[in-house]
Image (cartoon, rainbow, N blue to C red; front, top):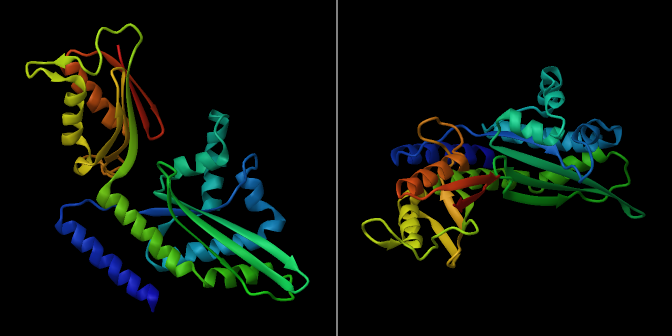
Length: 291
């Protein structure tokens, strides 16, 4: 019944957003196993001792499908990568990164299922973490424990653990995605001066004779998503904006709006003021260097 209510809420929310001229693209989710640093996704997924993890992953995937949220199958994606020899062409890319990148998903959910064996019975703890596939920022997380039983059927214990919190986790994940669409994705911006440059943040710019820092702040006011940004600090040599909101969806391409597009617009604005600069983009972090 709760899933039924959730679907109704989801449809009503879509209608509300359409009335506000917000573009909502049907999200896609992939469920993957939690992989410790240094471990390989394929090894963890295909290991015989991971059967209880795969059962937990299937239950999570089916729950999203029931809530009418599109999922992409991990096994099929791995096979596609193998067939296309993607890793061969980019040996530096690990399988997890390739799966996330080439699947085009919006969210990936990591599933961890820990077996706890005691003299009073065995149990399984399942931990779920949902991440924005674009930025790897955490969107939702939850965990639950199965009751203790004198059994080695860890697959069944994994399902019992999920029964304690899975529906709430799905709702939390969907709510986080709606917030991402409504309020934008967070990025950071660092603007600095190249050594020897003949200007600083206090230099007067253009006919208005605004300080460079003020001109940049005015531009951010007009171009940040819903004018949302926070300046951490300004000195003569640099300006640090620890959070700027950009739209999740590009209204023109209907695809994820990338930080590179925001950086390009800022560089073009600075160049229109006669300021030469370079840009460096690392994930969701933008670095602008004024030359």
